[in-house]
Image 1 (cartoon, rainbow, N blue to C red):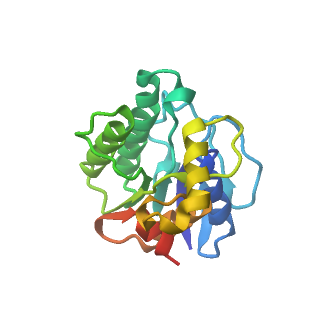
Image 2: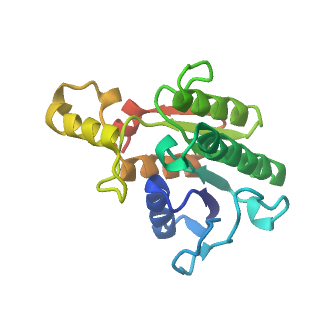
Image 3: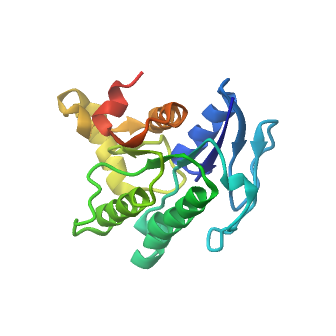
Length: 214
């Protein structure tokens, strides 16, 4: 029976990670640090934190595996600096604390095409996050790179995402598997599977693999 920690448990992927982890028979305890309280559950520990100043030595940093689904969009963040603050600083700061506490396994949700040398803010930031988390030296690190996420109806409008999902709905059978939209439940399922397997070294799960994984 394992203890896992979930970062970003209130987001599109994170909500499904939390639900699946709480239901999983091989997981005894789930730690989900959030800014606002989550509904109580017998298996859940929910530290209330400020991601601007995460605690350095909280005992709950040491777990069997951690899953990171933190992330935002430029529109939601409001500026390039604020976007990078969440998608790079928050993630790297948390990963450093996990590594210092001795947590052996991290599963990081990134994106297809992440590249530290990319020109665009989104792919460049994701790539830099992957690079610098890799450098921390986790015994097991799995980087998950989904394509367009299908999260159902969102509270805020995302025009580009809506157009992409519409095209995927009608043209999906002709779109290569790696480019097809993928349900957030499926991403969470694959992340949890990777955390429980804790494959040694660094592994990548590309979008096509996420579609085909059972």
